[in-house]
Amino acid sequence: MELKKDLIDQVNRLTNIGIALSSEKDINNFFKLILDEAINYTNSDGGTVYTVSENKKSVDFKVICTRSMNLQLGIADTSKWPSVPLYEKNGEKNIKNFVSYVVHTGKSTSIDDVYNQNIFDNSGTKKYDKINNYRSISMAAIPLKNHENEVLGVIQLINAMNEKDEITPFTEQHITMLTSLASQAAIALSNKKLIEGLENLLYQFIKSIAAAIDRKSKYTSGHINRVATLCEEISRKIQKDKVYFKDLHFSEDELQEISLSGWMHDIGKITTPVYVVDKAKKLETIFDRIELVETRFELIISLIQNDIIRSRDDKRKQELNDKLKYLEEDREFVEKVNTGGEFMKDEDLDRIDRIYNFKYETGGKKYFLINENEKTNLSIRRGTLLPQEFDKMREHAIVTHEMLSKLTFPKKFGNVPLYASAHHEKLNGQGYPFKLTADELPVQARIIAVADLYEALTACDRPYKKGKTLSESLRIMGFMAKDGEIDKDLLNLFIDSGLYLEYAEKFLKPEQIDEVDTEKIKAMYK
Image (cartoon, rainbow, N blue to C red):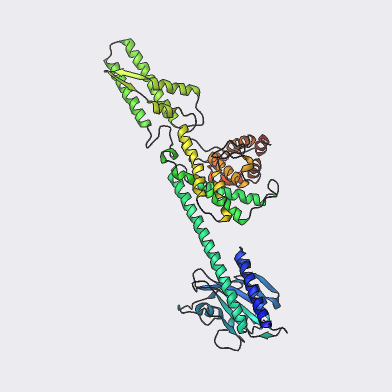
């Protein structure tokens, strides 16, 4: 009955440690759990967990414990505990070292007295014992093998003790139990590495997609990278903030979720037509149609000049000369307004209408300067996009949500579709694509909105506008905070932490970095 009870206890312990290992996220705590259970079960004085290095050429200390020396479970100091080489200088396997032997053979091994054996090199052990006034006697080493029988690491224990605290050899029962523990640990470790590998692959794939989208446009290269970086920086500032977000603390998973969302916020632009993304001038389609317009101007000017030469009517000549003067001025005007700006005056629109209505007839033919489509494009008041093109550009936000919603993200990253697609939403419900309100917009989505806005305002690679100065950018953001479009606390943190300036020094041109009266800016939306 006693044997049966011991067996049940062992099974229960293995079950509990298996559950604990599977749920432990921190890799160092994971190794501590393994070693702690191994030491407790064998009543050993101490032990070490090693892992095989990435290049498979050494085993590295991870955690170590020696209870009699008051060296409690902790992360091994690699400078004090150097790695154990798996191969000799000539390339042969190192099987003289106890731990490396277990890695190469994959066999659980024990030694009754490390000093009284001639199988393994004990010089290192003796050196350690001498320095620390210690006596190593019994040892055991159990490989951590995954489902493919690959050794991932080793659990090494030292000086098993009986109930009288006398050092004894490790028993077969110890080895059997430790082998079961090592098997569970190896499975959990393999799963951890697999999950980490998949997450790294996800992250790398997302970054490569983001880089491809940035490269899609010659004018916005680096936009996603800058926004994602700024999102990460804002999140880290929140972690340290004691004023505006003192009750908010992001976990590591939440920080990574924000980062992923920042990298993915413009993925929907993969479907935005290039002619819209790259529409640097109002008349641009596949090419800039200003060249056609200029050709028409030149043709009509040439025709008028010929008519002047042929005309014998002085009054007619004067009229034609007046037309030439206006045409030269109008040509310069059209070239100027073809480059989109911040705002277009009503009188400019009237002038475009007059140019559109201009017709010149000679030799029985009628000539025009601009057609209706060109007039419509030249009449764009702000920027270079027509309303329907702007709608197509705005569409990227909903496409982002649709694309990301179809992906099965790990549960801890389940909010990425919302956070990424909400960067054009406004707290007052006037944003897009879903017109979400403040109650529906978590702080993570607000972070991305602020980062995207600041990058857009200060960016100096847009073809239709110059990058704004710091004072101009923050003043615009101040008005938006006042109007309930962006988060006031986030803007306060952005300003007070100096992050706005840190970003500027990395990415802005020197002439954009002017003096800012931050208190005056904050007073706008207080």
